[in-house]
Image: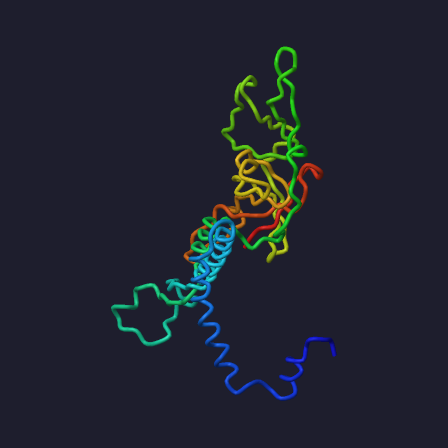
Length: 260
């Protein structure tokens, strides 16, 4: 037997005290007050770290509760036949069943607000600024070095117009611009070539998201109207999010998995 496990061994042999669970329950109830007292007394860096930890815990708890909330949703009965005898004045109406379903649209909006999704690649390698940008010399004597050329694949919208070269700080080469992605549907096990609508989040930072840089792990929005996906309410889904799973600058194309 390993050392210092005498308490566990005693519990195995003779069981726990009669009031063990009651004491544990009371201890848990006291924890809340102890934590509150500590939060009021903690100052400086310790207080900041404690507040940050509690804030993250509360957000996680609220999200979990919100995800389990359900709402009543009306939808047409699958078979038009009434289950019970109906009076004559109700025969003309559409048969409607009430069912409790989780609203996908509400869940999607909540995820958008939080900026977090259940993704295939939760962690990706961070990319250094030297790898992302190439310094370009400019000016009459090539002494100025405030311009940067992006060395990764980028996405720009249809109505994009470049700034005049004199004022353009970040240069996105046309050869590395992409507008389509090969998106795999995880349930259908099929891949479709879809148009990219926009870049939702780049894991390397907000600046790369605004510049439209596409790297491994980036969340992109794709046009899924041709797939014929519908919401529980019967509306056609126009755009859906997908996560990039490859390095587009190496492969010459964007491969992604749809987040369903």
